Image (cartoon, rainbow, N blue to C red):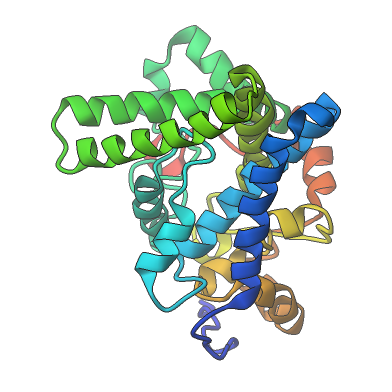
Amino acid sequence: MRETPSYIIKVPSRRVEWPTVILAVAIYGGFLALTWWWEFLPLALVALAGGWLIAWHGSLQHEVIHGHPTGNQRINNAIGSIPLSLWLPYEIYRESHLEHHRDEHLTDPIEDPESSYFTKTAWERLGAAGKLLACWNTTLLGRLTIGPAVMLLSFLVQEWRLVRAGEPGRMRIWTIHMIGIATVLLWVTVICGMPFWLYFFGFVYLGAAMTRLRSYAEHRYAERHQERTAIVENSHLFGPLFLYNNLHVLHHLKPGISWYRLPAIYRKNRGALIATNGGLVYNSYWDIARRYFLKPHDSITHPNHS
């Protein structure tokens, strides 16, 4: 059995990663500028730019979860904790995403918080309408259209149950998060005068759809956990939006690498990385769309829970 080539990457650490600091300034500055001057811009441009900024902000949050851009995680958390997307508390995202990085459990619907698979029991509980929606959500078109709604609603229902059950710390997290939401909406709807529907559908929902594009084909079950993580090459537009997380097997092997170092390191170690993940490589997101636009990416139930 091949071993994961953990030796292939050695990256010098820096105390402050200025490209990520500049990126954070660009995202928050762009958000403030777009929401302030939105009335002077075409509505379609506002929505497209807003969705891009929310998705980009999600990529920034992912970056700071992994210890960037400073050596002080409190500072990093402060950079990533502003809830521009409204629905996801940063602290919950951080906890669940670090749990997702237990690679031996990747794709497992019980152990991996980011799994898209169902257990057979959960699948049978869905009923006819639920199964229809779930099947549609396995196609790329479904993931981009109803996918954000499914993600938001299922997450909020789960969190409501945890809060009602008295899960330790959950009420504190949501209280702080609601203060953050109120601050964002005060700026957007009161100070800037943007309708809530425009912010929700043009920024939050479209941004979530862009993020769902990234995550759609990131993982697929395989016997070896090293072969469950994909690579999407030649992503010249979405690569920068996702902070090169499209090179996903490299991120899982070395999650501490800064986003702006990933492309060069990938090019240098491409052969070893493709050997490690068993050749699970896509030639751009167009390649993914061509294969799965109206077809499921994989079985809807997990093989180990069927």
